[in-house]
Length: 534
Ligand code: GLN
Image 1 (cartoon, rainbow, N blue to C red):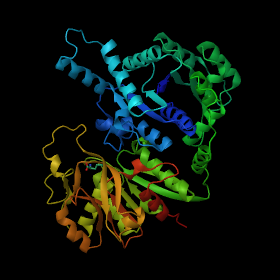
Image 2: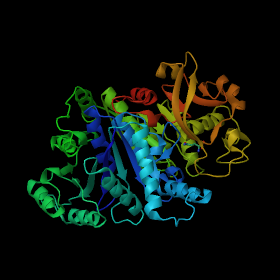
Image 3: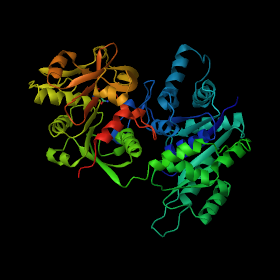
Image 4: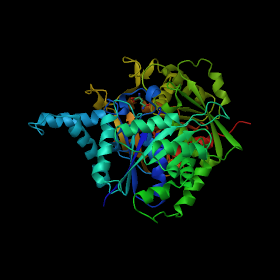
């Protein structure tokens, strides 16, 4: 079976929502009963997103198979309600490493190794392998960056070659651009789109569709003008105007006939199946917008709060839970480095501490975890938020002098959180944390068991440190219990205080498993406990 390829490129500038466009097209095809998946190409030189600062690049999304990926992979998983493997996030470093290693093994003996064909061949191999191995009807490939960037040229060239080799009946290009209006009543400007399509044509790619970001729906005359200058049929110039929730984007693209047009271009006429899948999806998409009646105010306390994208999956997971429970979630981002008056936290219905690394802002988090415990405010601590909640308890309830994580203070007198033993020999920082999904055993008659209603769950991890088991008896004697474990009891996975309104810490990252319509259980329980104050 020949997989049909849809290649999504970006024009004008970054941040236009290529990931949402890619996910939305994939969703429409999935709703039409097609087997689909997505790939994200990141043309940067990092091997993966794991070593990048989330404030500059957004969250590092962890896959089941332990990939530290671009956050767009999270979008694909949430839209498709389907796991995406790490091989679907292709970077320049991965491609070049493979080519250079092959050269050293002598696989190109005699040849001068070049970007074309050796690098472009490797890119094409990776894309085609995924299409074949997963037996896909459609593979949507999003190329990161903006056309004109030097970094993305080999990737765009490889995509161009696939169209030549596989034929136009198997490949479509979608170009995402912008039509800005300089004031509210102002005209929608087409020049940036014209130039960007020209730039794409200059490297041999003619877009089949233009997905044009704009504030208000693209006017007919704007569509016509764009069509005229870009050589794209007017019906295939699509308005991607602002909507309340990104989950409405599939519908607005569908309403403009994208699905019919895609099938026609691929010669699959009459395949659009308006199946019952749509009802389920529409119910979910609508649930993500309509909850003005009940509200939960959540404080997220962490150190990467200047860019909400740093915790994008946490943000989504809270909203999924809110949607299911009929509550709107209002999030305030609080910088753990600058917080000094913890009383401001008493205004919130719940406090969440997400993952994090390093000493900066850690004392603020420890004090936050302590405040939530003392004031009986629902608390959900994830990874770093789990570890620092244990430290707060050790310091303030167990009176353990100088309790800390060795990540924060190497020679702490009481290393309540310590390096995973297998990490002691590791010197490379990239890809070396404890990563990906592991099985977790939950103890009977615990809050965790009630939340998950299961003896065993599988959750994703990304950490180097863990609870030091030496202290557990002391914790449990004083009311903080460790209710789940993994790796044959070697790792503590959940902490809870049964006497508290809701106090839960998890070593794993529940946010990566949350999907619209199917909120992750710990988030649902936390939002449920975080009822609005009167
Ligand atoms: N810094 C901690 C560790 O490495 C927590 C990591 C995280 O929150 N993702 O164990």
